[in-house]
Length: 424
Image 1 (cartoon, rainbow, N blue to C red):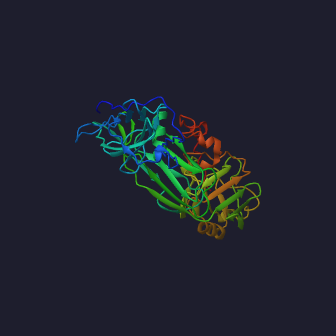
Image 2: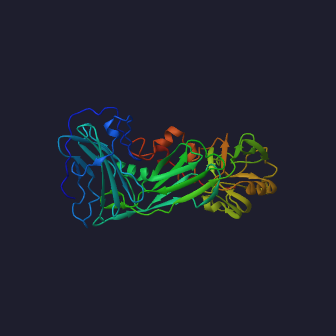
Image 3: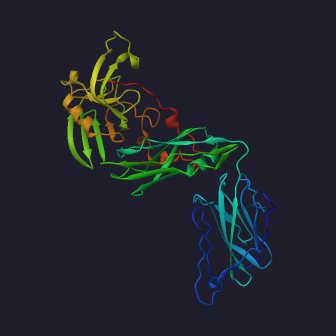
């Protein structure tokens, strides 16, 4: 970039105006009154300001360097600066208290065009304006940080988290903050939510409470062209749109041997069930439906139970609704109908009659919630075995954000996550 330009300001007080420099959006300076000098038509401030963009036509600015606008002369000051690229992304910045210098505080994008609108005032308080434009070049060498959002576009239950998979690991706290600020989640109706770093390459986003029923959630990335770290720049990301359906929550009380399904807060069915017996207790806590399989063959050998032992099994299972990757389902268990509603005899799954399992299979979808209480088992892991995100309270969840605790470090709970297989 070329040398910085100057627009020297006096040490004077601005009368009747309040300066707002905003990280996102244009700053606004407002005064009123016919005799107010700032109500006059702005003059061209070209001779009073300059910036460290390229001075020669055809040259491009270095995106690795911050943007700087400086005041020149002794009879004026900068009152506001707004910088935006061609994609509508604003550049955050800070203006010095004396109005002599503004500099960017967020990274510039590579290979992008910028428009900078500068507001000034002279020694008499008359307003000046200047619009500056420049382009940034490409970095000489780079790694691209791409983002893949999940789940697939479509309709889900109100417990469905949003996921972001990164193509490169991001470990530095400052770099994580850059990434997280660029990942935008907007919902209608609007709700409070936050990202949580699961590991160096994966983030989950969830609201403080479950999504409202019939919500539209749109996810996008503003990371493209933004410098994240040394030779690493943000790449492209396909935006995502999902919707939520009715609020469906199935509560399994292992002590009462019942599963009760609620839709939008109203009980619609209670089903007698059996859950995990001692030594194979069903996990307590909130789980999210991961998928449905009308038929699956379950073998004890796949979960470490030796063939021929008293606990071994090899069973055809119908109407299986999956809630963990390690093999916990809600499914038909016709072999245990005599124990359903009475005792817990399974190896960790929630079993019910074939007709009830078929009804449940058709009543739920991915993203719906299955909560288990009073099982005596371990609590569902937050990460790594499905979506146990809702088992972290909101305060704990927010500690996983790089924007709230300054590190985005993994929580102790997720580091200790255990994949304990359980089936039938």
